[in-house]
Length: 159
Ligand SMILES: [Zn+2]
Image 1: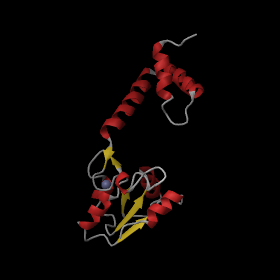
Image 2 (image 1 turned 30 degrees about the vertical axis):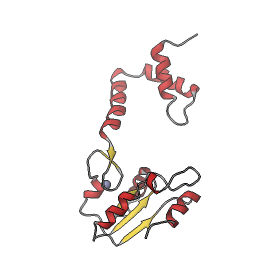
Image 3 (image 1 turned 45 degrees about the vertical axis):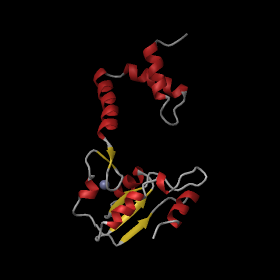
Image 4 (image 1 turned 90 degrees about the horizontal axis):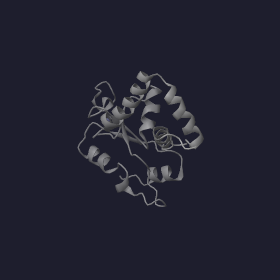
């Protein structure tokens, strides 16, 4: 039996999520159909709002709904240090530990010659520009992951 079109489309949508196969997508689709109508509307608008209202901070590359982001504009933070991380989720997890109080720069990836990712493919140029126009920063900490690509990115650091 074929699913009615709206269910089939919902299953297809869930299958676009990472790690969600057809079985899980089908379970989620039927769960969604049974959900309270208001909850479904809230869920759908959360998806759309997150996609439409969020963008990358023009200074640090963190994800934000205001530009510059709240970290870049926070005057209470230590503006002499920039911690360079691979992904937005690294900012979130490091900041949650509440031990680092400086600024961030998100690369959105790492150098990977094998995958053909060079300096132009990650957010390095904006960091160099950021450092050139800045007398406050006196320390840049490269906190890329301990993968071969992460290590290579840290090693080939300009300057
Ligand atoms: Zn920022």
